[in-house]
Image (cartoon, rainbow, N blue to C red; front, side, top):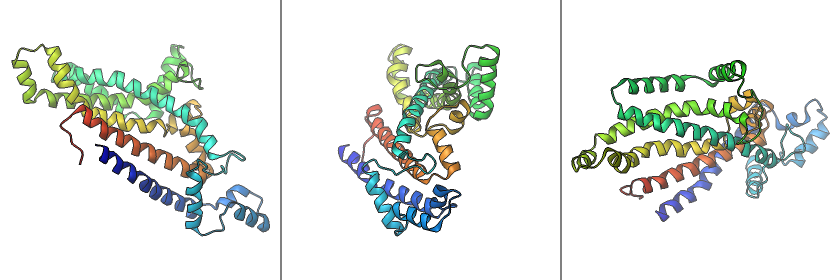
Length: 309
């Protein structure tokens, strides 16, 4: 397994280099000159040329990207075009922890609700509980945020008056409950369906019937023989969900006024703030690479029969 992990880690810089190169090219040759974005209405040719030289934008593209990668390895992703005088690293660093807390809360909601509902549906296969849970899962999974958010706000804020409507106060603040529920409901539906389907498949295996024929209690059969194998597909979903902790939720964060990565991403796209866009692309790509590696390693502990080549 050690050799497999090393090979995966060696490929990570290559993958990030290619992704960063594509994003860098798109930022330079996409719509809007970076210098014009910085200067806005001040278009004096001499000043524009001086700013271009100061930022190294007069050099060949590959040279510019080489300088960018060299600085990025030191944690310097440049200066924001929109937020004057602020580095990209400081902007992302402040907002990353906010999105991570929101993503963690929504992931916990999805797991706490999704796994028990999925297990219950599998144990009541073909009964009304199974049908109700799967139907409810499809309903919540298909609902977009811009529909569930106003509905929950109307119920819990306007009618019941038990939750705040917007703002941010951290992981243990009441203002995180509403956005965590909105982000967690689709994940709950997906995990419930995944858990149900995986558990039903495991229950039909020969080793489960053998365990029951030996006289083991239903609890021991389910806990020691069913649950561990049924959680392998769910672990894949949860592992990849870890990557979303750094990607943020654009609509939800904007809707509730949460100063996270999603809100920053939206502002950067509208302002064509290419340094922030490039840095966020590398950050999210790296998060998914690490999440995939964690999932692959976790398979080995969940099922010792899985071998790495």
